[in-house]
Image 1: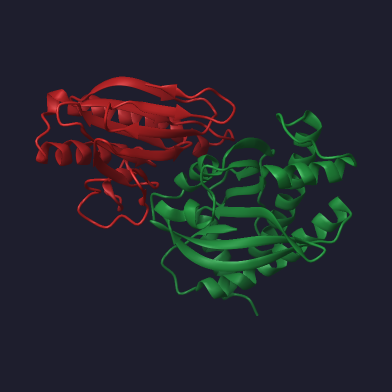
Image 2: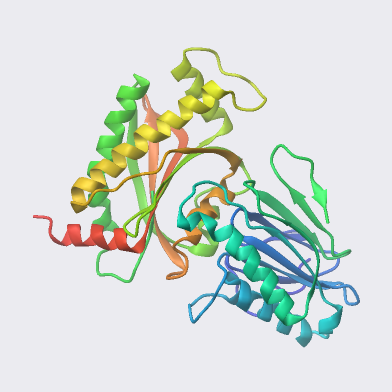
Length: 170
Length: 205
């Protein structure tokens, strides 16, 4: 079962056996053998994994930049990465051992200013991970497709599914 | 329809009235377009937490056919008409006057039929809101998307999520000859449009 999902109640997280879905703007902490999932469009799923502890987090990032705005830290790329690093460090993970993977950041429709949010989310997530010194080992981002990701805490692998395409594991 | 809510003395119930005219107009447009007794009803108005908005709307990793319009202005927003695959196929078949396809991708004719449906519906809503707030709103061309419903909605939510963590949800239902159809129309206005609608409410006779 999911060992810990933050210290606070997360209404967007629904446990279903060993798999929990992480809602928009939320994050979850879990350990092997559990899995965390998210549905992504313009949102970016950022996973940070500690192989030594087989412990990791998934943040379902909605927006690039917190800049004094309210909400759960996982809502914004910059605060999400800080939150995940500090939460994992508090559980004994060493920062230089953490491995990150990112997915999502699509432009699902449209050409207006609000439709570029996916690209901005990806840029912000990469910058935040670089700034925190967390190595990005895989990414599947951009395009105009929805993605369902499944983060396996036993291995750190992230499986990406899209409608009409073969699933990919990274 | 889904509206982003601000701190306001205007209640969810008050806002129902603002959309009654738009719903009637869209209903009439759909009857003319489909040449069938389709009726739209504003079924409920409620506020939902952002992180669970898709779940409460019953939109997750299911496959939907969607037609999205954006109104790319400060006073703007996003409209999304959603069908599950079966309902989308049935509507397209009905509009094209032929039997429903069972599987495979969407044909160009089906996409065209569904896109035009979204266009007619969205324009009816936008026209009604334009008259209400006395300001011209210009929707984009329609975008047809066949994908996870939540993937599409989150892009629309993201444009408005920085200011609040909850949204006012107004669900519009569709009925055909008394039977409920699994269609969903979601409208997410910008904060400025929301405020314009509230101002219009205050000045209603």
